[in-house]
Length: 232
Image (tube, rainbow, N blue to C red; front, side):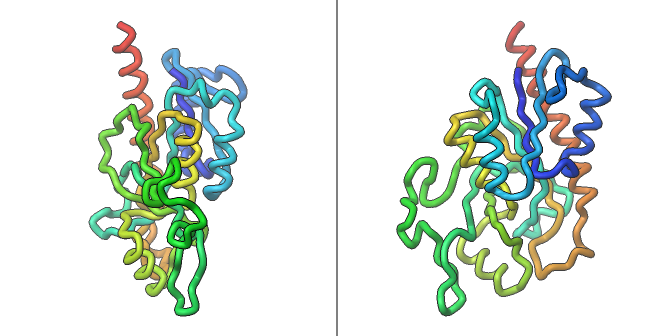
């Protein structure tokens, strides 16, 4: 089995990389072999553009069995506490459009600049219909932004317009690239903070990363076991 792990920063998957250094063999400079299966870490840089470009330029993407995006997320929903690990199965670009004179936001789909049902979109959303492998994690709806929301006014506006659960800076770019390339994918995120007027004192990034990487390690080992069981 060939598994591609995609992250915006090395920091977000550092514990997973340490796990590979300890438990796997270094197959080449770019990948690891774990129990006979190949793991490819790919750090793209922050943002949807870097993520989509990194995947589009990845040589041999069509040969990958599953692509996993791992990172942190902010939560619009207080019932998703810091440290919770979830899977984003529906996402969209949430700040691509125009700001109106009254301060409201009109996206490119409302403007008619992009057809909201043009592949891979459904009413402006990108749905992960290529999640062949099940994480067992709670599933949520995500928004992808270039500017993280940090005022009460902007947060209220975005929540009213889209009614999503979490916010990231890469998710929709990841799903867009995977849907366009027709590859199996999963977007795994851990909640690092509530999306509220910016207050980093309430963030728990280390806890989120610890939980994220524990879930990532478990999922990768689950995939390997399923592959081995299927070959028996």
